[in-house]
Image (tube, rainbow over all chains, first blue to last red; front, side):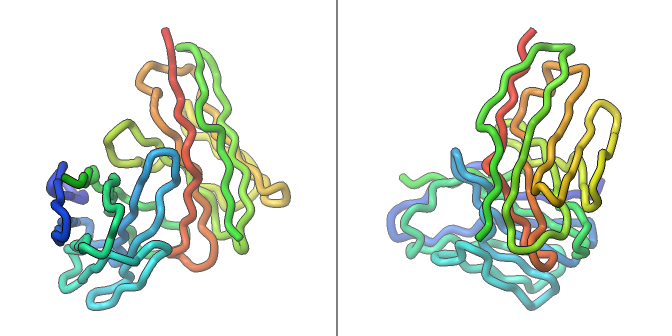
Length: 113
Length: 110
């Protein structure tokens, strides 16, 4: 079955530590996205990529980094510069057209120890 | 600026009909999406509207009025499994600019 796989489901970060969230898709989609979801707030776009080896900052990119070396993979690193990293992180993909829906992964809950 | 408003929470009874409203103010408009999200899970696509009018899909319907910056999601014959958050999202300028509302948490009771 095609879909998006995020791992791990739960992740804990220590002070000053970088952590990487995995996102893999086998839908052959060109576009991939990372969103952050906080209680009482809408999903906010962190980074997106329309094609391999290219990515753009979203609305809240500070303290995060990404790479897109393969079409199927779009990992997100939460760096120590992100002072409030506790949130639910959602990865998504789409064909890349304006009218195309997003397919979401099941999310990673990141918490700070 | 960009602003999308939805009610925070709604309650309804099994078998009833509920309407979830969404109003938006964005600099551009390239379509409006509704997603359903159960707690701790991935949002799943429900509907897409780009032209004015009603789109019906089984028990769910979605309406759009671009002149009023308004949409609603109508859920009929409510079931317990419909208890979830419903997210309204507007495609602003360019395909990557999808702006989400805060979501409406719907609780369906027996």
